[in-house]
Length: 479
Image 1 (cartoon, rainbow, N blue to C red):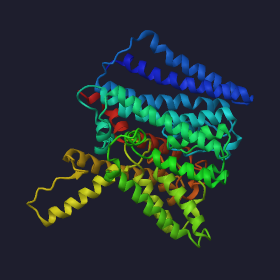
Image 2: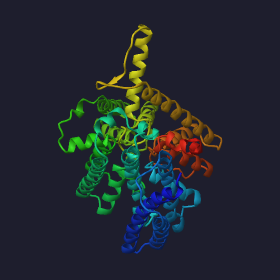
Image 3: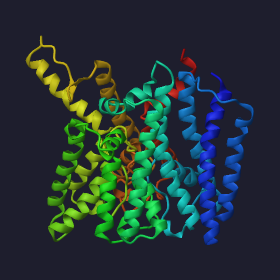
Image 4: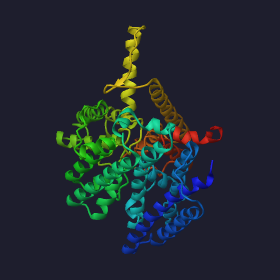
């Protein structure tokens, strides 16, 4: 493996982060706030480290499989490491562990936070915090769906896992076209939502930062009460719509926005995504009516927002779901597992895998009834090979096992069961809030430092689809 090539690509990623740090510095300087010097120093240091390998290493597109993996994983780790600098230099609640936690949760678009008072942060630092979401959101799409699939004839395992049958169907583009698709959708969603939020009453700063958090399915807000601070039905509807859209496959969104003659509405994955959310919203609405809210309108309003927020792994909040009936909490917990679609910025098991899982279960029942029958598994008429089915089932089992072990370890630190396991589920799914102490209107400040470090590892596992991070420990055994 050519380490110098790896360092060059990581350097390019750091330069992008340095640029956003500098924009945050300009905002800080305009407002003359206390984050100005920390952001400037962080930007300079990040730029110097990122630029250094570019001086000595010539560009190349000839990357090996091993080099691609190392670039992918260490880019995430390095940007999280440098991303904590503005927090650490600013101080306040940001200890070393807290700075690392806030940086990782930002770049992985998880949205969990250690902050007890978000509004105490200066605007420059708030912008950088939201920028980590936006960079992390488009970063995973560009790496997994653009860079990795172009690394030769043998596609990397991480790419095969991320590229579900629906993803493959909608990403039959050459790499240059694929890059334009991703940028068109990502920038388009961000711009349109920013305009709408501004028109419906947010300041331009709040509109931009909340659009960053929505489209990246991250959930960082500039307000302590998240979206609930604005108490605006119009704003909530806009955010719900864009959270739902951001949880869809970007290729599908591109086909919709460009009026392609593709029957995307017949996709079993999209239908499952839509109808599962619809059923979940209706059940929670019925559950909270009369117990938490007096009218059907209120019940539907808060139920729809909170469920779409968790299902898309965004994590914005308008209500304290910890106070909801156990039935509602169990439904929300299910969506913490399922989450949204492959090919989006969302984390979790993903709808695509759930569809394959349920179809596999149905096929197994048929095989028990007819042992000699050959029953192929198909999605929308496309056959799914046994390797894909096996990978999906293995992923789901491993996902639940990691969640359980992580939650179990956190309970040994004096954290209650609901908090420990929901925090583990919320971080590996990159959804953000859990239940108990880490509920939708709370934070992770009370989790012990060791627990926070475990949860950041959980976030990275979830964002890199588990195997993407695990395989880095076996690089030396590759041939």
